Image (cartoon, rainbow over all chains, first blue to last red; front, top):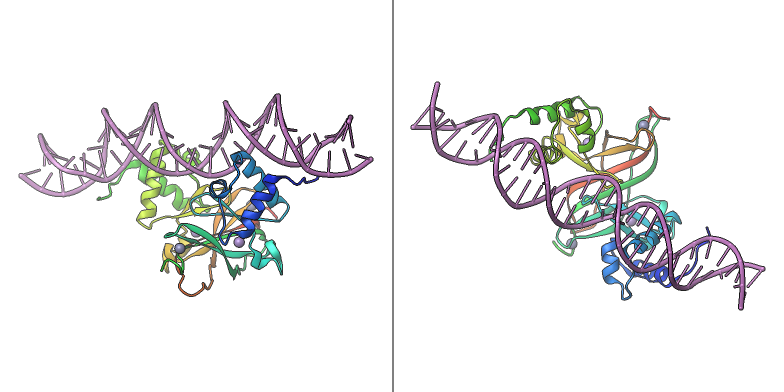
Length: 125
Length: 125
DNA sequence: ACATTATTGCGAATAAGTTGCAATAATACA
DNA sequence: TGTATTATTGCAACTTATTCGCAATAATGT
Ligand SMILES: [Mn+2]
Ligand SMILES: [Mn+2]
Ligand SMILES: [Zn+2]
Ligand SMILES: [Zn+2]
């Protein structure tokens, strides 16, 4: 399954690279200057996730959001779990540079963490 | 809006009280001995959440799960945020007695936390 | 140029959750 | 105990997010 370069892929990637916030399929479709099919956007995003280029956040609204989190790039990249913040006022989701720390009972093995804090962000308070 | 006692409410509440795991609407409907309408179950659960009797967890699958978390009852009850664990093997979600700790940037106010760790639980490993 | 096959668009399907509305029943109180 | 009030329920329809099948398109290696 070799990946190919396409305008669609480039457009979505650039949008995520330039965005300070995590984006939903919906937001991506709206912010794109070119028209890309809904299903295609999802497929592109899922591919990015599979390739560990992008990470997926599921928020309290049950929707998926996608982010590149450039800040994390230096170190453990996407694999470093961090908190996310969902502002109820401006309705955005962003990556916080706050690592998720926890301990689990014996015998539990953690593969992933999906942590979203909800409240009001700095801009809105 | 005074609450009333109904067989439906009792049944759902008992199920949650006796369950070691967080339950989805789906799971609740299946485990109930009496037939209760889907919409009604959601309404009962949403009422429980509003009354802080039950807390809602949104998992990576985008679905809502509901739990009473008896262990937390003593202290700060539902309001005390804790991690949840989703086992990919037995496909269940449980409350962990692990508090969620974090710090947020200046000006951010946190109202809620939805934190789910995913992996393999003790029973399955 | 050509063959291979990854990617796309479209429409339909799936699934979770909500909502309007009329019927039912729990509660308060006369 | 009877009655009025209104919270709760069931049903069907609706919304929204995400996926899937399939045929058409186009990126890539030779
Ligand atoms: Mn992030
Ligand atoms: Mn819990
Ligand atoms: Zn904000
Ligand atoms: Zn398990």
